[in-house]
Structures are given as C-alpha cells and as structure tokens.
Length: 263
Ligand code: IPE
Ligand code: IPE
Ligand code: MG
Image 1: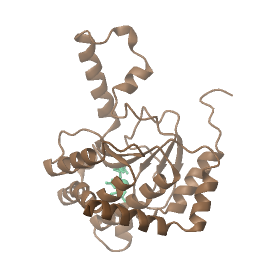
Image 2 (image 1 turned 90 degrees about the vertical axis):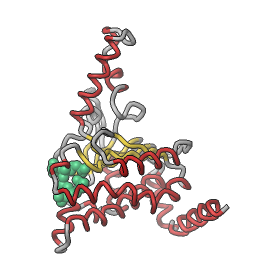
Image 3 (image 1 turned 135 degrees about the vertical axis):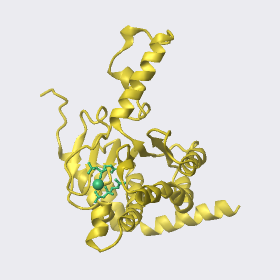
C-alpha cells in the first residue's frame, strides 16, 4: 500500500516536471528513428571535481546525478537500451579510497533510485565480471536485478568491472568448453555466435556511443559491439552533461548516414 502510494507520487512528480516545451522537444526527436541502444562512457568526474578544488569522489557523487538525469531522458524518449560504463577492469589501478567509494555507489543508487526505476518499468542489469567485486556491491546489483526482472521497459545496464578484452576472452573460453562437451560444433562459429557469448548477448549492438570529457578513445569498452556504432564525443565533463546535450547527440545521430560498408 505504502509502496503503491510512493509509486504514484513518483509518477505524479515526474509528470509535473515535464513541461509542454519538453514534451514537444521529445515529440520532435521521435519523428526520426531513434537509436535503439545508446552506450555512454561517462568520463571526467575527477577533472570536474579538481577544477572546483574538490576531492575526486565529489565528482563521482555529482556524476550520479547525471546518471539519473540521462536515464530519465533516455526513458522518456523511448530508448530501448541504455548502457553506462561505470567501472572498467583497469580502474582497479586507482587509489583504494576512490575504488571503495565507487564500489559503494550501487548501494546508494539502490536506496535513492530503485522506486523510480521500478515505477518507470526499467530493467536493471550489470555487464562485467562479478568475480573481484565486493560482496556488498554484488548484493546491491542482485537486488536491482531481482526487483526489476519483471519489468518490460528500457534496459539499463551498468558496465561494472567491465573490460571488453576480458569479455572476449571469457566468451572464447566458454565457446571452447561448449565445443569440447559437444554442445557446439565447430562449423557454427560465426559473428552471431560470438555475440551470443558476450555479456551483451540479448542486447542489440549500440547504435550510438557517447563519450564525455574530451577524451577521444574507447578505453576497452565494447570493442566487438561498437563495430558499426556512431561515435559522438563532447568536451563536457560527465557531471555537467545535460539532457539537452543528450538530445543533441541523438539529433546528430539522426542526421548521419549509416552505410555499413555499402554505398
Ligand atoms: C569517470 O570519471 C568515472 C570513472 C571512470 C569511474 P573519471 O574518474 O575517469 O574522471 P577523470 O577522467 O579522471 O576526470
Ligand atoms: C573509462 O574511463 C572507464 C569508465 C568511464 C568507467 P577512464 O577514465 O578509466 O579511461 P582512460 O583511463 O581515460 O582511458
Ligand atoms: Mg577518466
């Protein structure tokens, strides 16, 4: 009962937030085909904080707000899948305090955002290697997955302890195992089979990949899946990335001509 009331209240507040102008903007973006899957390298939290004389973790805190903002924007637009690169297999090289802080964010996000995600019918997933993550982080992820598993709306994936090369190695290992056990025969090896063994098996490849912070690189993110994605870069740091900038990326995407090697 209380939960239902809470849900209603969230829905009501969200609705009120959508101005007439906002609704028109969304409707106009929806006139052209939208990317089905948007993947984002959320970069620049540390520099955002440094510029303000704050510790790096303050940047991660501010970045959480952007996660919420962009999740809402993507969901309101009707994007099918949003993937957020949250922690790479290389990010373990960072100072212990910063890593610990980042590992606490899923729990915090669970406390603050689960109700809204449920009310939006969003499914939450994790892409990455569970091994190596602290138990409390995994526990928050499991709770997210469990609470949203029946949802049928946008798929929100957090790439956590994610590295594309590790993902590919992992896929090859499992393919070899399945070939050895006779579950797979050698002649079935093709692009779609490899895709089925990646963390992203049930997601379409990203149509659009956004990276903030001015770095123009992939940093071990979805090397296989980005083969034909449209790439979009901005100098803006992730905490400052606004809904309007997200819309701009979508509009630019809609103006591009995707040829996949054809003419
Ligand atoms: C992105 O911001 C968040 C994570 C990688 C976890 P950074 O922490 O990389 O910020 P910069 O790139 O150092 O500014
Ligand atoms: C990529 O950002 C990883 C995430 C956004 C989680 P990094 O800040 O780790 O990438 P590099 O070190 O600049 O390549
Ligand atoms: Mg960075």
